[in-house]
Length: 132
Image 1 (spheres, rainbow, N blue to C red):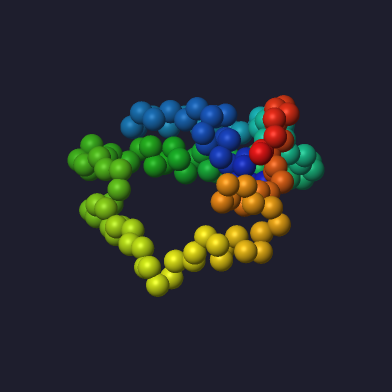
Image 2 (image 1 turned 90 degrees about the horizontal axis):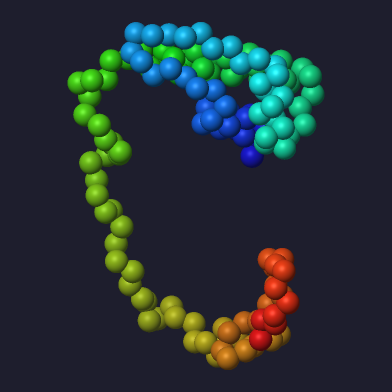
């Protein structure tokens, strides 16, 4: 993911509070200090020229959001989706002709335990218990 994605996500979601009253526009300027703080929260190291650039871009983004906040949507029905479609998935169906028998699937396995593949642990934990 790009630096800008992380920074935009943080700034839009939590770092800057944007007034939502219709008819009230509060000019928000995202300072370079705020960009540095956001970059630190996102564990990003930004060169000075990018800090200034993000400051300008965030300010422009907040301006656009403020413009959107001014739109009167009182006559628009609330919705969480726009297609009108409900469940468009199908039920799972097993094609018996394509099922791989367990014996065939495990034939080349290096290590098997009770009919399952045994693989090295890939998630570090403090636990010392064995997989088997």
